[in-house]
Length: 203
Image (cartoon, rainbow, N blue to C red):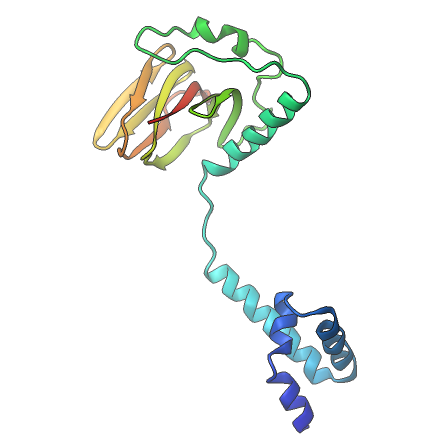
C-alpha cells in the first residue's frame, strides 16, 4: 500500500493527465493503472479537477479576432492561388461606394448563408493598411485602437457607431473615422446586416 501511496504522491499522475509525461513515464502510469484500480481512479479524479479548473478560469476570446484571423487565412490562400494583389482606395470625406465596385461585385465577395455575428473578406493588404468588406449582424463589440486608425464606409444597412459618449447614426454612403485611443462599438439599426468597407491604417 505504501508503494501505491508513494506513486500517487510522486507527481507522475499529474504529469500524465497534463500530457507532459515522457513516453516511459506514460507507460509506467498506464501499467500501474491497469494493475491497480486506485491509480485509475486517481487519474480520473485529477483529469476531472483539471477540466473543472479550466472551465472556471476560461477566458472568452475577443469576438473580433476570430473573423479577421479567418479572413487573413482566406486572403493568403487566394493570393497563393493566383489572385492579383489589388490596392483599394483610402476612405476619405469624398469617397463613394462605387469606388469599391470592382470588389463588391465579385462573386466570391459574399457572406455565407448562415451569417455569424461578424464576417469579413479582405480585399487589400499592405504592411500599413488592411481593407476588408465586413458584415455585422447585430453588433461589433467595444474596441480601442492605440496604433491604427479605423475607417468605415457603410455599403448596406445602417448602424450606430458609439465613440465614447457620442453616437453617430450612419447609413449607406456615410463614412466615419475612429480616432486613436477612443473606445468605440457598432450597433446595427437596420433589419438587414450592416455591410461596410472597413480600413485599418497604421498610425
